[in-house]
Length: 450
Ligand code: ATP
Ligand code: MG
Image (cartoon, rainbow, N blue to C red; front, side, top):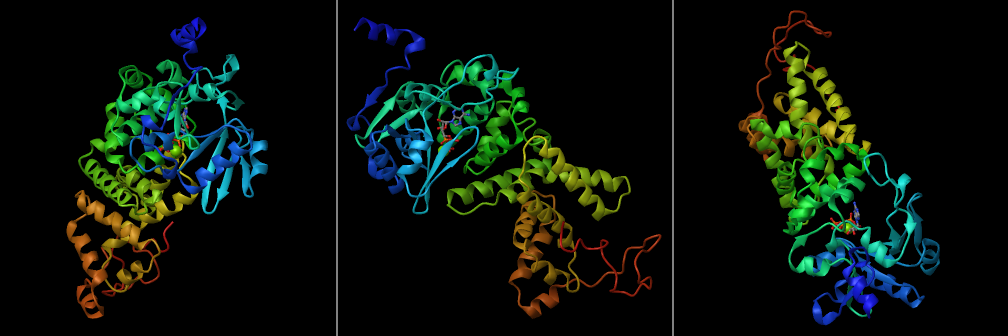
């Protein structure tokens, strides 16, 4: 009795005994889980293991939001989990978890883990280098980021196990880090990004102690591996609340250095409008359940960086198209040092950018050929955003909007007369005879993109 009381009072030990909230205390029911989540939990429990739905899904259900996916935590090791299922795969080398496939769903099953301690557990900034030590359920709760992300739902009893006070924090709509904030941010600076992202997405207030150190510790973000940053950035940008979240990131001093010069971009008159328009469009699509292309989004976020670099080169007298390709490469490689944009996106990003000058060519067969380009649609949407922000002429966007819908005869009438090539001091290419209609308007078209 006294020991339990003491355990309650001593802060370090508070995490030992969970508070268990039965179904009379909340409205989360097992039929809100996916079939796969239910059956995998049940199978593990029948085999004698503990198994709970944990993390984002429990949090979302308590907030009346439909979860994106279901993660499962268990005391079974990956080797014990795998043989229980027909299609289960152990993934990860450093930190191993099991992906159980049921129908077309994948349930991520992770074994309870403890936060690692000791001198060689962190780097010189306090960043945790690994978290692959198995532990108790209480330890598993304590190593998670926010109290509301550390709730465990048992489908069998429909009860929620809470080791860290997350249940009341959800009721209070309060985002609170588990443990001492400065240490927890040093362990993993991405938690700062997550705090702002989750608070915005879920309309929670960030508890004072949790929010206070963020501006001060923001520089630690530069120590996060680019691939992780990309994952979190992508979540943020595809959350349906990107615009609001980026604003909030800026308010917390976190935007700096994430996408290089995002701050500078947002301060340029066109850049601000352009990104606002792009993000508002993306947010609307996400909320309507439509697909969003990360490549398109990253293309928009970096466009004004490309423009600035490109314009500077043109002012130095470089030829427009090679200068554009140069600028694209420069911006993407500067970016790669901070956020690793996967290669498969890079090709698309470059195509969207490199097609932009081709929209200016409205004579002859060029418009029709441009429309056949596989990235035409994305490039046209991109042009529309440029128009909306005032960086490209709205009349150009309107022309393309009409041209796409027009029939053959109308198109013919819309085409611009071929212009004589601009006077060059040293005309290049084979045909030096300046026949009207035979020249290029703005130099060679970047046929085929990057
Ligand atoms: P979302 O709904 O956006 O996916 P989430 O909370 O589910 O939010 P995940 O990245 O899927 O986010 O993480 C699942 C769980 O893992 C979290 O709920 C949290 O308990 C834990 N977690 C995730 N990232 C961290 C972190 N950086 N530090 C500690 N725990 C974390
Ligand atoms: Mg999740």
